[in-house]
Length: 76
Image (cartoon, rainbow, N blue to C red; front, top):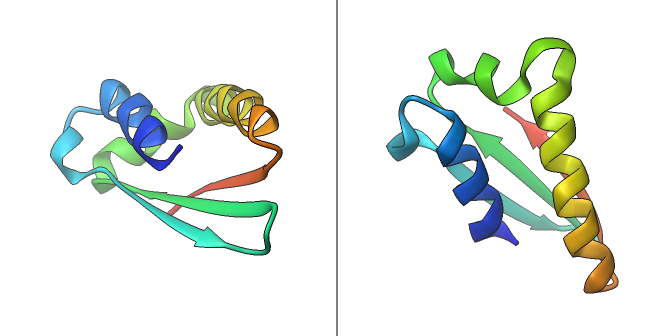
């Protein structure tokens, strides 16, 4: 999932080489992903009213359910 999130975010931003996704295991079913990118690209990742990051969360949530996981995504 980490690679998939990185791929999605890289398509949105102007500086895809600066995108980094870190993974933190919270427990056996919960994973937290933290997206970091160039300061100029953070707004593009979040989107107007948070619509882009919410769409990314929804897509990843569908994938996580298939693997019986819970996922949290944050932008740093």
